[in-house]
Amino acid sequence: MKTTAFTEKHIQAGARMAEFAGYNMPIEFSGINDEHATVREGVGVFDVSHMGEIWVKGPKALPFLQYVTSNDVAALYDGKVQYSCFPNGRGGIVDDLLVYRIDAETYLLVVNAANTAKDWEFLCGHAPKFGLTPGKELYNASDEIAQLAVQGPRAMELVQELCPDREVESMEYYTFCKTTVAGIPNAILSITGYTGAGGCEIYVANEDAPKLWEALWKAGEKFGLKNIGLGARDTLRLEMGFCLYGNDLDDTTSPVEAGLGWITKFNDTKGDFIDRALLAAQKEHGVARKLVGFEMVERGIPRHGYEVVAPTGEPIGVVTSGTQSPSLKKGVGLAYVKPDFAKAGTEITIVVRGKRIKAQVVRPPFYKK
Image 1 (tube, rainbow, N blue to C red):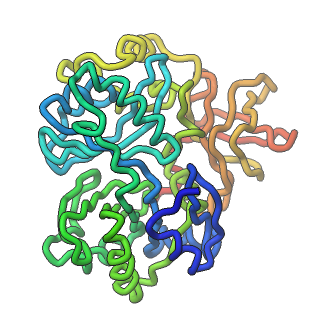
Image 2: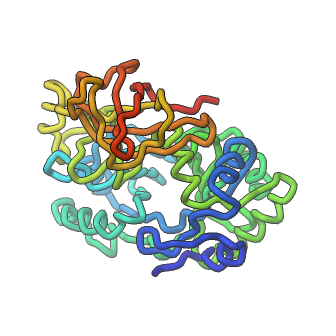
């Protein structure tokens, strides 16, 4: 298994470790419910160094990214981040990702850890059409970068103490800056987050990771900073209704089916891109299934793969993500269902261990501050 620059710190802290995306990662420290509450109410830190980072540079970077992603990269400005996906040419999704615009000819792509190798192969396959050379204008820096996500309502108050050169507490959602963090120059600090609790991500070179870790924990003492594992990361993102690749998105799901029409642009500045015609047709004529949020009406915990049926017993879909919400104290989830059952307020039934349990379609987020 691969390790991150912080793996030994997690082991020393008593984390329950397990393999995730080829890495030895912390699943939980003090327990998922405690860690979840910490992020909702205070501040916690996630090691997300397993995520992939790919640079795209040069005069052809923009037209290349316009073709391989679904969103309109031309809408970005320096310091802006965009959520997008890679269409796979068959109506599915290679991966969902973040696109960072450093400048007009420099972009950073942040991709899912489990898909980094697949994404790299996908990008390299299309690079020659735009004159991009893998290893040169297209560069996979995933093994060179450490990343921490500091999340929670007190996160930016804490991180501000590490950033003497810049005011970061008022940074807007989906923006980033290059600044000195914990004495480390040119660190990337971004405000995206996948918890709905506020906070930021800090990117540094692996060799600077120990310095960042030490400074963060020293400043974090008075804020009650805690380690957070991947278990709570999943419950936090699901309470917000955020998709997880491998569960809610994959090579067979289209962005239109997944409710990601808002990151699938057909305007003139976007131009042609992979699957444009197919996705435009889906948007115009509709799809055979839609991703919806639901809450359990009766007691029961939905899980990935559970069948969804109509009140009449007719099979109508499948649960892609589900959990017992630590904040709401009830079962919540995401599921693909037939369009007739996709409207908020519709009653559906989740088959939990052979038993039909009532649920209701709702519009995420499930957790609202």
